[in-house]
Every structure is written in structure tokens, then in C-alpha cells.
Image (cartoon, rainbow over all chains, first blue to last red; front, side, top):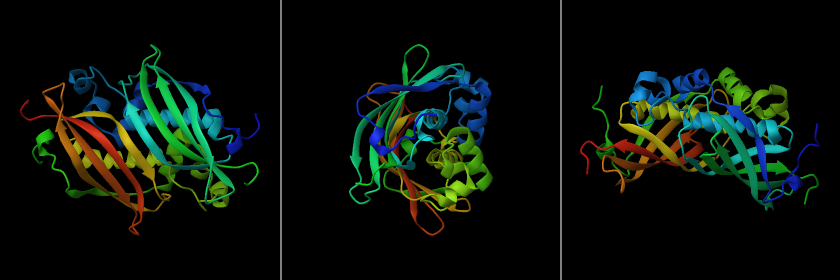
Length: 151
Length: 151
């Protein structure tokens, strides 16, 4: 196990692979039936007639799959205090079952909290590519982490 | 059943209730175990010791619950072609099991697609309040819809 990550450990401008996930048809449909039952996410025949030509993953499912890669690669082994939000989510290309997604993170900026000396802010750019190297999603967001030593 | 919604049917500046959802502890934990296994989402004892004082829903789970309200209240009965992305997501207050969330939509802007005469763009501001009237989440995003009559 690596040492637990604190705010001080996040270094801007380094692009790191978080991990890979293969998109599973059954899971795509199950997620969408519960949370996003649009025809092109849940109905094979309707999806084939749609502009996508087949079932695609809900964008929220893609975000959630990427969140899991974030957790496994660094967040669960950190002093994460959660997130106040996301500055942008771009769903750039459809995500199909069978796609193998690779997700990367690049720290954009870190700064100490002005109001809470025990924590700091990390802004991150996440990118998700499929097995053909197409960028299917990108996202910029904020996480709060405890500092190893309060400022 | 109301008439199917096309791009022309979206009118700016009208705030509409999409629906309500009660946040379920078992579902919060199940979602987070699969997609966001941070201690304050999955472990009651760790969550009680955290800054949140108890289990809270993953922000992605809140987005997904709101997506379901969007689908049920208008998207599934529309010519929705999906979304290219979200301009911002703000997780403003923690979402706890037992909270009753009310979600609202306000169309911010509509415009015809410059490149595809059969479709148009709708930008929407979504707000989510808990049963105490606290704003717990807001979001601005884009959807594509077919036009009733191509421009």
C-alpha cells in the first residue's frame, strides 16, 4: 500500500493513467433502466434505429465508471473530503458496450483553502479514451483534501 | 399522455417541478459500493466520524436520481437525442438517506443547430432542494432535440 495521499502530494501537470474498464452491456442497461431510461440506453431495437446505431451508456454511467477508477487509483487511499462540484463534463463520443475505457488524470491546480487551514483544494482534468484512442469524455472538477500539516 | 415534446416546445424562464425522490440508504450504499466507495458513502461508522456525520449519497448518485426525474417528467416523452455535456455541477449540501429531494428545471436558452437543420439545442438549469428547502445541487447542461419542422 502506498502512503496515504494528502493535499501536498498532488502535483500539477503530470498526466497519469488511473485504470481501465470494459463497458458491460448488462450493466449499461441495468444502470439506465434505473436512472436514465431513454430508448437508446435501454432498448436494443430502438437504439439500433437511433442516431447511435446501438445501445450506448448513459453519460452518468460513464461518469460513475470513471469515479470508480478515481477511487481505486487514488481517492480511497487519500484524505479526500469530497467534492463541491464539477466545472464541466463533456460527453464527446458515444460509449458502447464492449468499449475498453482508459481514464487519465492531470492535476491542473492546487491551492490551500482560504477559510479552513486544515485542508486544500485540487482541481483536476480527467480524460477518458476508448480502445481506438478516441476521447469519449473529459471533465474538470474540484476535490477537497486534508493537508498533512495544517497551514 | 401529453404530446411528445420537440425542440420548439421548450420555453425559457419557466421553472417547473420535475418530481420528488426519497433518498434510500440501501441504494446509496449499493451505488457507492459499485461506483464511489469512499468511506463516507459506504461505511456507517467511518461516515459518523467524518465531516458529514453520517452516510451521504455520492454526488454521481444524486445526479443519477435527478436524471431519472428528468426522464420521467419530460425526456422519455420527447425527441431527445442525448447530451454533449454539462457546463457545471454544484454539490452544495450533503444529501443524506431519508432526504426528500425536489428537482426543478428552468430552460435558460434554446437555439437551432447551425450545422443540422433537423435539431435544436436546449440549455437547462436544474435545481435540487431537500425537504427543508436547502439547495443541495444545481446543474447547467445541454440537450439536443429533434425539431418538429426542420429549419
